[in-house]
Image (cartoon, rainbow, N blue to C red):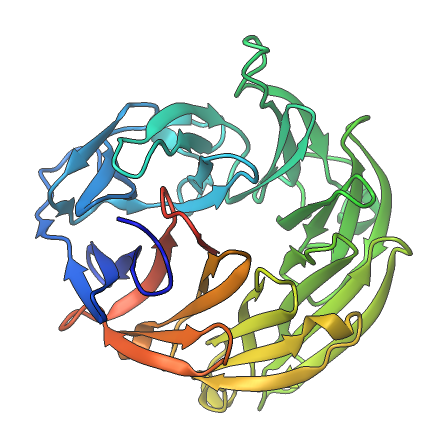
Length: 416
């Protein structure tokens, strides 16, 4: 189907307490509907991986590295992996975090780390193509694509960055690990040694075309490692405490960090939003937002607004006081100053993560999609006026623990 502000379809993967589901939200002929993809019991064995939808069918991969197939129903134990789009392409990189205890993807990598699967979307009605599955380091991954035929993948449990070939013309390197960067800061380790694994715990990685540098957030150290992707070396480190993820401004000048302080005040969570100027290497703005856990931060397509979704963290009095039903809006044209200009009222997200999606038409953000997992709803906001258009019900009787949007083949949509 065509995608415009009054005729579109967007899919999302729902994780229940037990099992999973897929919903396709569709706008057609002036009416918004929610289609529930049928669900079926597991047949046992290796659970398939959910990749996205084509039409009203789900795209599944039966095992790492296998080809994709279409199915009319979603198997209840299908894995919904987090997918990162590769800018300027139709490729998506799916992160397999590995086992919760070891960080290893035992099925595909044994004890040698966890995997990433690269998938290329074809046309709207064609089956996506699985390009490859690669073993990198252990734990959760975040990819960055600085060009020059390279991809950089952070490895949470190892404290490293894997360097991959990403140029199909170089067959010997393409989608293979060709190097690694050790993020260890020996002075921050108990024994003072440079080692892998280490306590860097990288999560949050962006590339600025303005400085031609990769900025890697090391949560364990509270620092950013500045990486030269030509020499594959760390050339500087910047103190950046209190943040757990990074977002690059559309002009490449500023990095936005978000996080939460649960230690300073036992009665209140203090949400942290900070701004780093990549040209000066200095933090130019930092604010604490009481009783807010900033879950996801995203700019609109025009680069004029920064949207921050709220979700839950902490326990006891901290959790009871949290704001769980708002999206905070900041004026991105005022950067580096953080000027909050609106609070959008949505539903409740009493869970750890609330993503956000945008629909863009002719360079204009027409629609904003905000899930409310605890309320089992999705709020659709007008991207121009900032006012809610409607709220639709998603799962029905099953409580939703986590929701992720599916952007494979979804032209005009982006988000996290």
